[in-house]
Amino acid sequence: MVSVCLVEDDPIMGESLKQRFELEGVECDWFESAEEALPSLLKGRYGVLFSDIRLPDMSGESLFDQLLEQGQGVLPTLFMTGHGTVNQAVGLLKRGAADYITKPFDLDELLAKLKQICPELFMVVTEAVPVLGISESMRQIEQQLRRATRFNVPVLITGPSGAGKEHAAQFFRDQLAAGKPMPFVSINCAAVQDSLLEAELFGHEKGAFTGADRLRPGLFEQADGGVLFLDELGEMSMAMQAKLLRSLQTSTIRRVGGREDLPVSVHLVCATNRDLQSKIRDGSFREDLYYRINVVHVDIPPLSERPEDIRWYANRLLAGCPRPDNSAPYQFSAAVEGWLARQPWPGNIRQMKNLIERACINSDSSQLELSLFDRPRLQTEPGDSDLKGYMEQCERERISAELERCAHQINDTAGALGISRKNLWEKMRKYGL
Image (tube, rainbow, N blue to C red; front, side):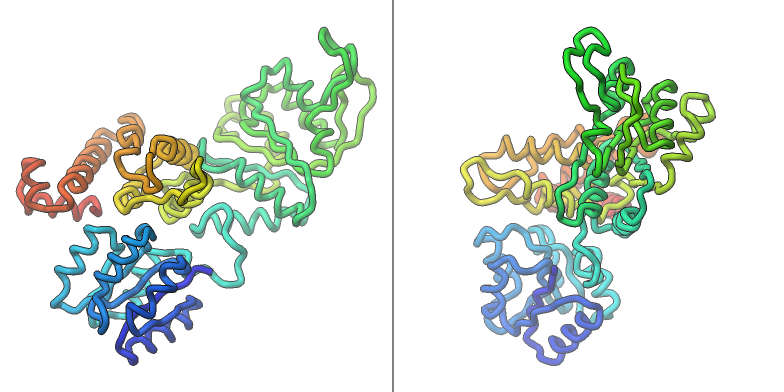
């Protein structure tokens, strides 16, 4: 479980914070000096570091620097500071710290900051480890899919392209299998010509058509006892929809060229990024099939609507990119982590995966820097929003890029942009920079 490393030399403050964390169900290791905390921090045991800047043996800033020097990347770090060290805290933010809080502070304010920095801390201990995301919407989807495994009814997964519909279908299979071998057979209905889709799904007998020199079981038979995933179901022709509906109603299939109905038992999962109700209205999707497959409906929101999942997904995707020489694993620089979290991700997880894999391939070191990422491609097209919204997005990206180029020096950034410091601050507040 993700936990907090608390570094605070004041015994009253430290004990109070540790007790409050435990009341919130957050695991916390409390150290009264940086020297005590450092060995555990170097083992990578924590999800967040919460440290006072002023400590008896070394400053919180020195502790932060040592972690960077030891190749720990940027552990999400929240600093406690008195009024006299606010400038020091601001400097740490520029170097990658997540946030700071000024003493005296309200504990609810502290918890709110920690939830923003590291949402994983506040997951209920009894919950299963997240698979589809840590956002509330994705945790609810996981629960919904777990409940669906109790019944042999179709599951319909909707959502935009790249949002993780097939991943959700695989999660459903894994929950259904409970650790036992179980087939997961998938097909993209939009990628197969309609004339071939029937044979793909239902199989064919020997001699059923030219080139059918042997009997070939279809995907329904291959998935018997497991899960059949029909992706892009909304692209299926009306004729194929009728044949699919018959199979679902009778729990049988008939191979192309065959005369017998063969019993099959599959858990059907369908997915589409199309509005099926709209297709029903325009006559391109069967209403009876819609009601047959829409027993359990899961709608996956775009990544832009669940920003807390962005860093979680990015780190999971990065962990799946092993270095070819088996040396130190890849890690994001602080600038990259911040940039990833600010993107709209119009292509969702698929786009993120492509971008991270490309950066890993082009990187000569284990730390991925901002220059490796093809930043302009993440901007949405003007047609995706009104002109004002698009112009604001472009302005935000430009200001963000100049801030990074000028190392967050306000005077330099304002000069580069040709605006006043006051105007720059106003725009930074407006865009959350």
